Image (tube, rainbow, N blue to C red; front, side, top):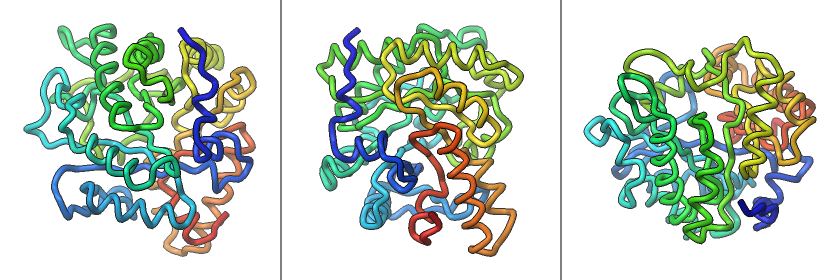
Length: 323
């Protein structure tokens, strides 16, 4: 495996995201992308967040870019008729997410950091994060499909492939697939330490990705596990070629963020997940009070060791000068 530290330094926008001490530069705004035109659908469980078609998304992100919010994570939302047992639509070069990536990079070039979610859950008809065999996930077969998705996103221009599936060995495999395709400047943001958390509910509503049976305890980390497993997952992904190491969720695992940040050399990211976001949004209707809460939360992430903060609060925090 080729070690490529230049990936995180490749553009000014990437350098600002990974290495700035300012919270403003560290923020990543998630987006839910759907097919069609003129779609701007509010998500009931996540006030202020919408599912958007590419044309609307471009307008939204143009506004974000003007106020300095330059890093964006895209999640594809598929219709039921597009889903199947092997998530074949997820790697299709005609998929609406691919068009969104291309148009964003065409419009904003190296001024934007585009991150794309790479998992199977939103494209499988069963909602699990991998390909099933006798109702169990086949790790290695799933990794093969993840590599196909990663390459399709990288070819479209994604800056970072966000591997959120938690399959064993997928970072090494994705890095190899990118290298073999000549996509040597594409980074991997690995969800290295991702817990089987109860804070993901609103996201699963937004992405229509809830499993149709069972749960994700076989691959996501047990909430009772100690620091040793978190460090193992993080350092393993780093050794396999991950460029950014993610801990998810954020608020309930700040102690884990600190432990991981102390042992890895790559930038550390946190995901301020949908359940955490919705708790804040439902706690008060007063914007000033909410702003103080968000500011306090963001500083706790930085203090714990996070370099990158993925949060649904990002846009509002910047637009209202909460930081």
